[in-house]
Image (tube, one colour):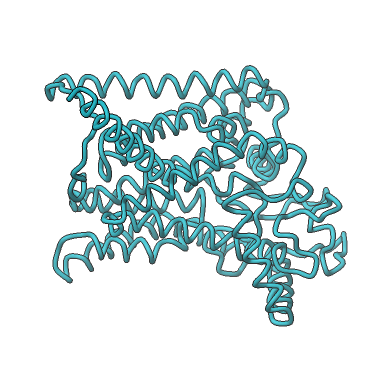
Length: 439
């Protein structure tokens, strides 16, 4: 664990080291099984494996197994190479679609996602041990096991669980570098960040901040820190580069991982922008695409992105005050919820379920940030991810609640520390009162 422990009364257990070790093994096994059972029960009760929505990920997966490559068919036309999604998740579900596209395949995908999600609870436990107390790590892993967002997305066909898993694992190994800056840990961190980028490309925007965090926290000379940064950066780029080369070959343009940046930017910044991807009428924002497409010669992904990004920048230039107000609104939507008329009916129902867990988590996280002020430097990595993710969606649009899912484990860890502080605070008061009564 980094830094020193706080000097206050804490709830402790008088176990010897071996017993503590065995207890933790039993606890982690119990947490894993609890998380897995809850997720599989949710899948079975809701029959989530019967005709689930797989949207663009399913389109790409079916194209792969159909022999068309990583492509999409626009308006029923010929298949054209696409880069509209990061590749790992479509390839993952394509493996199962190759055998069948029925309930068995969907159930298999959801069970594997449930296992990955349950395993993420253990990653968060070990991450918590490196930053906070054992008790905080226990609370955080339990919070991960029962948090409704992760239970729900284990039963869907989208990359939310993969995003949470790979980002959490990347963060764990980044902390390992600070604790034990071996070349092995640096290589693994670089590889994991690269893999994470092929699931959720936003981590690339966080990459300069990650390097700053390593520089601030890692012990070593100037030359040693430069060497660490070069190793991590090289391994990250090594993982991403083959996909970038593929994108250049099919688009004749530089596309690091995926397209749609211009489209998403325009959805959040146009005269009819609402902050989400829907109009108040319930129609998708793309229904008011500013240029008419020829069905026989539709725009390519690159052309559409270029057109829409120009339109968005024009809107911002002509309406700076409106842009600022929209950005603030989207920031609020990201950390809380958009109104029901700006999301789908399914999202509105999910919002009702998530309101209390999200509110309690944010409150505990605020307390956790305050009481962890002395750990600000080591926690700066979490804050950098908060900044990057909320910043990206504030400048584009808040389309789905899952967009914030990747950073929820960081919130749960900080919130668990806030909860542990509160428990100890009230325990201290009760302990003193009880002591006074017995005197």
